[in-house]
Length: 209
Image (cartoon, rainbow, N blue to C red):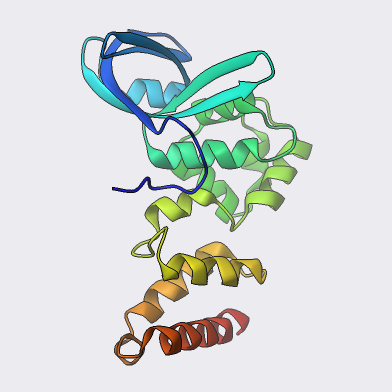
C-alpha cells in the first residue's frame, strides 16, 4: 500500500505501546526501542491510556544540530501541521501550540469562513500571523488530499487537480468538481486521453462561471 501523502516525512508512523504521557509529548515503545514524540494536547488526549497499543503518524524535524520527532493521532492533523509550518512565522512549536488549542476541523472552518478573529484568538497567533495563515492556506490545504472523496493521490485524477489548482482555482472547489465529473457516465465511457481533455475542459468552465 502506498503512503497517503506526497510530502517526504521519512518515518510515516510508529505502532507500539504508549509508555508515558506528558502535556506536550508521549513516549512509545516499538520493538525494544522507546521513542519520545512531541504532540499536540488534542492528539495526546485522543490516544489510548499508558500501557495500551496505539499508532501515531510522525514527522521528523532535522535542522543543523537539532532533531525532534513530532506525532499526530490522525493523518489529517499531520497534513494541517505541515501546512501551518509552511507559513512564514509559524514553526513546529507554534503549529503544535495552535493544534493544541483548536481541533483540525474547527481550524479548517476558520479558514473556510475567513474568520480572522477566530484565528487571531489562538495561542501564539497575533493578527499579522493569522492574516498570513489565512492568505496562504485558504483553499490550498494539503490535508484535503487525505480525504478527497475518490481522487487518488497518485493517479491521473491527482494530475488533473494539480493542473487546475496551478491555474489559480481553489483546491477544494477543484476536488469537488473533478469528483462529480468522474461520476458522469458519458465521460466514463471515453478513452483516457479524451476523458482527460473533457474533464479539464468542463472543470474550467464550471470553475470560471
